[in-house]
Amino acid sequence: MLVRYLKRSVTVAWDEPVWQDDYYDHIIRNDRDYRRIWQYIDTNPAKWREDRYYCDMERENDRAQPAEMP
Image (cartoon, rainbow, N blue to C red; front, side):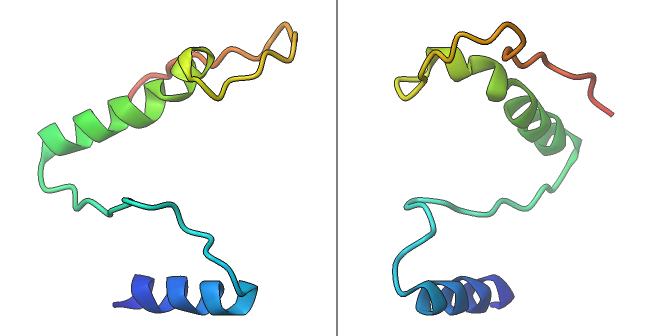
């Protein structure tokens, strides 16, 4: 309910949609969920070069590296 209120308030203040479609929150219910979501968040930037929206900026150190899970 709080998130819905926040999103609506921001959208009304900006007078245009600012939230991505098909976004949903997920409750982490167990260790398996935590590890799966951690892996997605951690490796997602490493896949940026494969994304269709990627634009090569010709920088040397722009590759993301997976981190160790806490």
